[in-house]
Amino acid sequence: MRTTLRLGVLGTSVALVATAIGATSAQAADGGSGDITIDKVVVNGGKPVVVGTTNVVSAKVSVTASDDSGIAETTYISAFGPNPNYAQIWYDDGDITCVKASATTSTCTGTLTFDPQASTGFVDNGAAATWNLATLVSANDHDYIHRDAATTFRVQRYSKLTVNASPEPVTKGRTITVTGKLSRANWEDNQYHGYVSQPVKLQFRKKGSNTYSTVKTIKTNSTGNLKTTVTASTDGYFRYSFAGTATTPAVNATGDFVDVR
Image 1: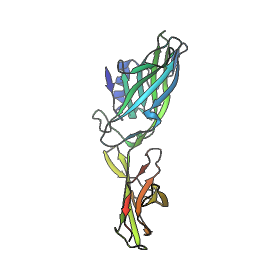
Image 2: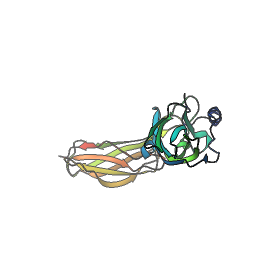
Image 3: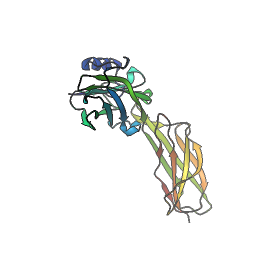
Image 4: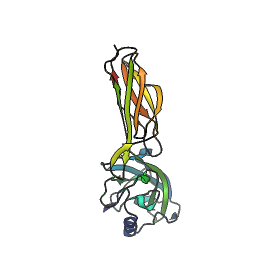
């Protein structure tokens, strides 16, 4: 059986699912018995989970645990956001896969699912934050261990960045105007809105080179737009580059070629 609650579901729904699986809630204390240990937990390969406005995003979770008698199963894998309104729970009593690394150690894997358009609840932008990953693991001798925060991971709002350099072509020594826009997913209306007052680098890659160099750093305006000027010197590609924030991933615009004559 597999049950999924989506990103940002209502807190009351979370309580129902927690009851259905008979698991310890996100607010309960850690617990366990015997000498079983959780050795390593990895969410999404150690990278933030980046969610846009339409696509469902899946993140693999691996839990490595050890016990003298060997590991029997991982009963559930659950993720909890910064408050009950941002809860994503995934649990399973049959589809979590455990693979033995040795007689005492196994790695069990499952999947978290994030849906920005889930009909079962709502999403707001406060869900872009640090989440806790909870899990319950059992050993062959009935030892068990539960951790409410076996590890933490970040959920971020997908970002987009554009660039346009003009005129094209341009005479050497003349002015090139470089415009663009930095935007990010808004989970309250499932649209992309400008990310305001953010530092963004204008970079240039000379024709025939594979390396971009920073020309200058400017900030997005009140609508997320970018605009600056440079002097035309040689053929090459202009792009904007954003380093990212805690809530929004880094992104580079696709380079725009300018023919200098």
